[in-house]
Length: 146
Image (cartoon, rainbow, N blue to C red; front, side, top):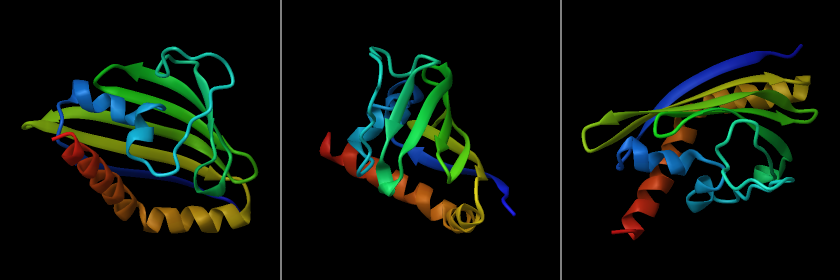
């Protein structure tokens, strides 16, 4: 039996939303996410344009992504499919928080097999730590920028 999980968590970014937004775009994530290298099968001068398709091979899995929504500086949403493994949505929402941003990240994923269901359960168990690793990687990037 497969399952669907909805996971929501938050992290803090030391930039205002208008600047932090880029960190959660297909190309912007390359700056801080180890192994993240989006490939665009068609020209994509604006990688945040709804309808933009890209692929990744992070963590040994081939995933196809589609940008589904965008409000610059506020939110970006994706649909993603890892064939034979899982499918779902990822939504990132940014709000001002002091001198930075609170970033809410929601994954809604459906496992496409029983084995994928076990992997999804493990992902859910480690979700808070996963987002902490994002925050740490982004903090490290921002520290290099001075």
